[in-house]
Image 1 (cartoon, rainbow over the protein chains, first blue to last red):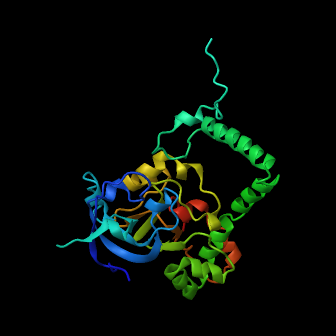
Image 2: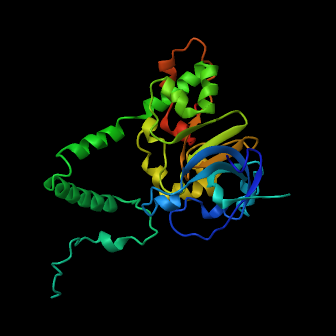
Image 3: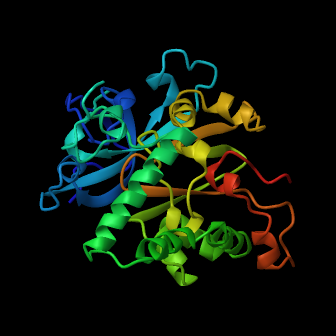
Length: 95
Length: 218
């Protein structure tokens, strides 16, 4: 069962992990809105080191306002960016 | 004269050329030539050891390159003439593609629709994630570090350089294909689709429209 649902506000955790974690640095610490639960997938952090027998993790499409991601992205307040975030990198964001 | 280390099994410059975090995407011909040389040597060894049949690698490459743009274009053309199919395509791209006999090899296909209010742009900042099973191999600029870094950071400027000026009132929505989804843009249809044959409509679709760096002139 997915922990998060479409429309919910979440913050991307900054777990400080190096390597092939598939969570872009530019969204870490930022608040976005869940667009879609995509299903569960093998954790890329396991796959990157050749472990194809690890636990599966939920994956979500999350949408961010560009103005939240980049301090100088000021002219187009409605522009957005959507990217995929694995569940263990997410926490509920309030307010 | 320096003594050559004959015990080195890999006397190529590649071994020290990349750091641990460096993506294996090379951006110049010299790099590609180097990779090609290593690939050829490796293939020779695998064939000698009987792990690979001669010509097997070429067959696999052909298999990868066979799906071309025409599959993606067919999906778009069908969506343009059949609203029910369009809804199914937007709900589950992989399932809808299967209706037309297309096998999407990637985990899921997310189709994002361009409308008068929203323009979608696809990028993979991580490497080169791309719906290869229905579009073939991505163009070299899609893999370039320049496109990958700038498309998320300043999409409107990048689009302008592609000759596409998105009006201020239209929202630009960038999709960073960083994980398990693969993306396809459903471009806006031509002004008139009634009575037009699907094959003709598919012919209007360009690769760049499906990435979002071009639109159909209406």
